Image 1 (cartoon, rainbow, N blue to C red):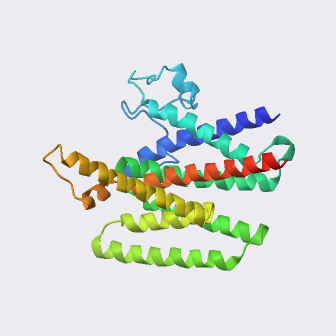
Image 2 (cartoon, rainbow, N blue to C red):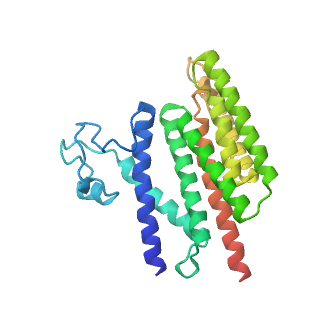
Image 3 (cartoon, rainbow, N blue to C red):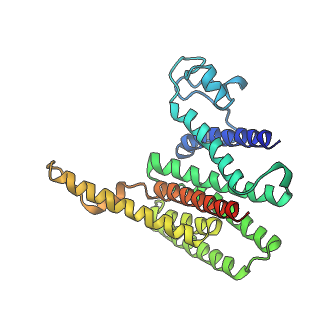
Length: 275
């Protein structure tokens, strides 16, 4: 029965992956991601029902649009598989089993799915555009408030810890509003700060701290590589230019999900040994 459960979770994950590709493409273009029908970005033809099945439709169409025969970028297919696999990994490491399935397990996994949606959308948009989308950040704040409320009611978690997070949210948003009025643009820094707070709420301060450390190390490595390249090329970039070109949000997200998975795997391994 667990095999059927994980097949269902994989299908759900691949559906999320299909949504991620759509949202990452449309959100920066300010296009509707809910009501507008899916279409081919090359010929703008609306996709039929058979074209919307994740993974299967890509294989059946041999990676090409049914209507204009233009080649579909393989990253859509890859992301759908990775998303389905990621959902299975989290479900398995969180102890989601058919025989032990409870309402609380389902709610916990649902919050992980919502968090993964937040983190993947931010990572994808930042990778493509080096931008922390404000709408996605607000979505992250909303699910964080829902998650904190759930923990306070069900798990009787210390409310003062999350009250501090809410205050920090408000301060950052007020700062961002003032910045927006003064400079008429979104602040990349405030977007990163909002993302870090959301990470801390869902994955703990320790995992978030390690995510930041790994990202900082990544920036340092990029600066070092640039210094080595400067010896071979005449064109030089300053450290500030490298940092400005570095998709900090993308690497923070990748680090965070990786460390979270490793932490869950470590906890599962310890429980398995102690049995």
